[in-house]
Image (cartoon, rainbow, N blue to C red; front, side, top):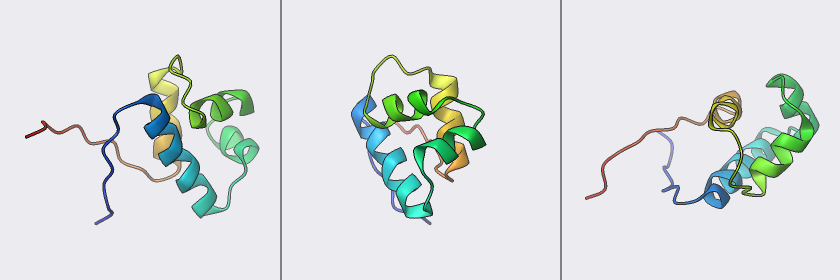
Length: 74
């Protein structure tokens, strides 16, 4: 099982996407094309722009093999 990270902001989410994309060796443009999205969207997502559309953000996370699990904080 992979190591989880608490996502508390758009910036945290974007950093996770960027780290995983680089780990997989994709450019922003390649990832955008694979997700049928614009490179600008991927760039803004990785930079933590808070207005990124959730459905698109989830699509990108799925494409780089990241699960999004919501759990109650204890």
